Amino acid sequence: MLGVMLFLGNMIVTTRWKIIADQTRDATIVAFAQRQVTLTDSVFTALGVAPCWLLQGSMVHALMDNAPGLAWLANGRILIISSGIIWVSRLVPVQIKQTRLARAFSAGGVIPAQYRRLTRIWNGFGTSAAIFPLLSVYWMVDQPV
Image (cartoon, rainbow, N blue to C red; front, side):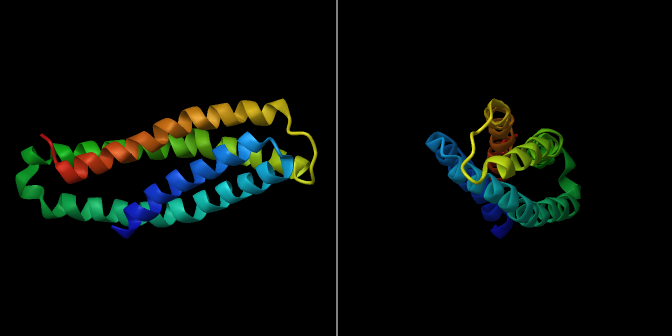
């Protein structure tokens, strides 16, 4: 349960931070928020995903006798894997680029158009990466067949 709270809480809170900071258009605030988003994603996503993944794995082994009734578990796991693929392949590289750009304008410089373009990409892929774990929680709690 703690892993799910860390994982989902981090996604919701950091997204909120970033959106609010970007709306200010203040280079110092945007740069600070970008550093924090990158840091908290690195720490709390890892701390949240690890227990979730281990718990799902133990559930699979514990419930092996009931393989036909485990579609909910498989679907939940597929959604988490899909979210992870989006994070690793799209969001992390975008965040790294944004953090590098933010370093350059952190002292109050102008936020470049490239940063705003990367923010739109981050928002788009981030929405998918956030929806998948939320759907996974639904599958894990409601266990629809």
